[in-house]
Image (cartoon, rainbow, N blue to C red):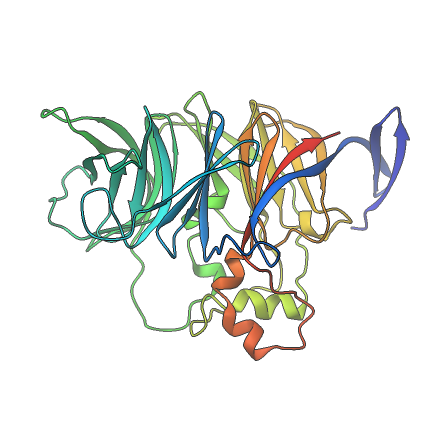
Length: 382
């Protein structure tokens, strides 16, 4: 099925006419420029060396950038003024050497999520540690090994991809609440997906890896609804209440976009010495964000347009509304975007390249440019 697109500009609003099998549909498109406000890291900033940025968190007028490689949190004001660097490396109270995510817990407290054993180290970043938050699973002894490899949090709820010895992998909803001793803990409310694949020791196939392990395809709304795109090759979003009850399935059509050979080689590198068998096409959904009640969907074809990034915009019921094109220099297929509210967006560059250094060493003639790690704060501007 061939699809042809062209555009017409009327008073700043662009309409794309999609002609398919003789039918014509009018699609509204909103173009937004990502206007850079300030950045840290990169080749031109000698004062800040970033290694592997995993989280950018906003608390009012403050921005916190978490470098998981160095266990440091870089604190800036919204206007770019430097405040402090907090070094949380170590094994003492409020410290962690192997955290992968920074969560803002409210009341000036932050949580460093450790993968194995799974727990959240809590601190106010001023040498005032709070009791550690442990993850609790019904019917699972606290001494059972648990790994928590990806999380997202909003308010009192956390989505976490976990693995429990002898029980397998799952995507779970956790609620933060006090135990009988008055200490904040994370209690599993529901398991949305669960599997117990056998270990074969073979090189994995990309299509066989549970897609719900990818935190880029989940989000939590301000109202406490949870959105998950569970399958790689389906334009499908599940919507859950905080108790785990499924209340909606949002479905859309998707025509796969083929990857270039360079891009297939790039995706094959998980680290310098671990590879996977990759698919020749992109996933149906690569990113999912809930912004001001709208569902922003980054499809597998969004990075193949003549824009930095493109999103399908759905209303709260899952009905398609319009497209948003984001414009910024270069291509955005490797970048992580963190939406911080009030039109602010943090672009994280270079972190995916840190996991794939072997690709650039083995493919010096590749068309893919290696990025230096940096964080760029932008404002979406019409």
